Structures are given as C-alpha cells and as structure tokens.
Amino acid sequence: MYSMVDLENVEPHELDDIEPTLLPIGPELRPDRMRPSVWEYDAGEENTSHRQDEQEELYVVLEGTVDVTIEHGDDRDVVELTSGDVLVVSPESWRQIRAIEESRVLVVGAPNVADDAIVEDR
Image (cartoon, rainbow, N blue to C red; front, side, top):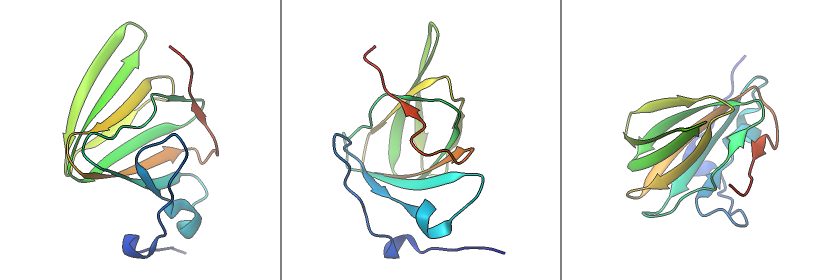
C-alpha cells in the first residue's frame, strides 16, 4: 500500500570512484517502477559524466546549489539548480552534477533498471 523511510535512518554508502555519498533509499522503499536515491555532495564534488540506457531521471534539489551539465548531440547547457528546483533529463542525454555548495539531491530514475548508467571516454 505504501512505504516510507526517514533519511536520517538510511546508512550512507561510499562508492569507489564516485565522490558524492549515496543514501540508497530504493532498497528501503522497494518501488516497482522507479529507482530513487539521495546523493549528498560536499562543495566542489561531482559525479561521473554519464547517460542512461533506459532511465529518464528526475532531480530534486533538497538542499544546496548544484550545476548540472547536460549534453545532447552538439547542444550543451549548464543549469544551476537550488533548493526546491526540479529537473528531468532524458536517457540519451549526457549529464554531470557538480555541487557549488554542500548539497543533497533526490534522484529518481524510471523505469527501475539496475546498473543503467553508461560511462564512456568522450
């Protein structure tokens, strides 16, 4: 019927070669159709530039300010997001998040596909 989690009770995960800290809320919530997580960034941290195979991704800045670089073909935009801003990025667009200040970002990918990220030397 529903599931709920308090972020303060989720054990953070440090991932190899990825600077931000992951709060894996998906395993706690067990959604069928989406893949949620919360990323915690220190100022200056950034994730790896990537795109998705299938997942459309929704970003909600819970705290702080981040720059999101989005590339699609020859188009490249850098979008600044602050607390309360929401952004959706299509699977085929490359994206990278860089924290301007300490930040917390809710990321929801859909459909719920594990290991959907594609990282290449570009």
